[in-house]
Image 1 (cartoon, helix red, strand yellow):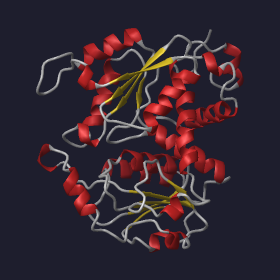
Image 2: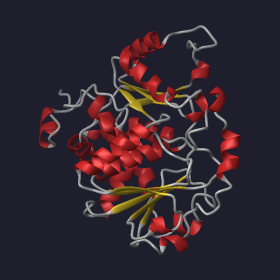
Image 3: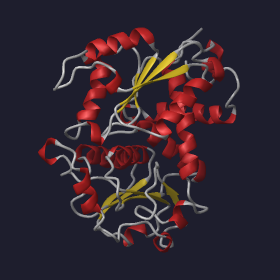
Length: 351
């Protein structure tokens, strides 16, 4: 049996991966979508376990990763911190080093999901993933942290590529939206990173005071410059729609969300709901170049976007949700499986 060229690698953010490598994952994901229950894919994780470590709840993430492990012939095990004796600032217990080393003896991969409500300041979630990756002897997969959401980014770009034959010269509008969820930055930042890496023009719209991570924005600017694409920031909730080909409407928290060392969710929601002009409407979509609507879900309908748009004929939200399964299967197969036949890897350029 053989291992892919990516066997054993971590997947923390798409920014860590070359576009050519991401292309191979997407190509395999499309083949897996077409041949969903066929060999060799259905036995690549036979008798193997994948650990899913959830600090925060989920719908699509848990369902899609469990389904992915099952369809690859393996098993996904659900873990929660409250059911484990782990060391924290307030309690004694097992260190990250010990937990990661032990998990590496049981499973072939470890996924971690840790978002805004489980941390005290921005960056803590991503730092925890990197700490597990430091000590684990198995791949660590980011199932969404407070900075990045790589599989969501892959699912987004997979759908966009499927509907826009040529990405260069096309523009994605990523616009802030008012809402009642006080969302983290991970999905929007990952979308910006991968859209820029794939050569799309980027138009980022938000009210003043809702800036994203400056380091991420600098990386996005770097990618767009390398691709001779455009990057712009606007604070206009209406004119920003002019001529774009993709609209991504999403609420996100402000940089002040962690003042005082706690996540001020209710305060963030109260503030966000005052910006009533920041919602994607059918009227605004008329300003676009017949744009597709994308969103990572769950959709805060009536706040982030009108139903007419979210459920309209140009909405890709359910397609993107399905893509999560396929891109995760592809990555898990490449990072975690040693059961490939050499000829299967070779003919796909994965050896």
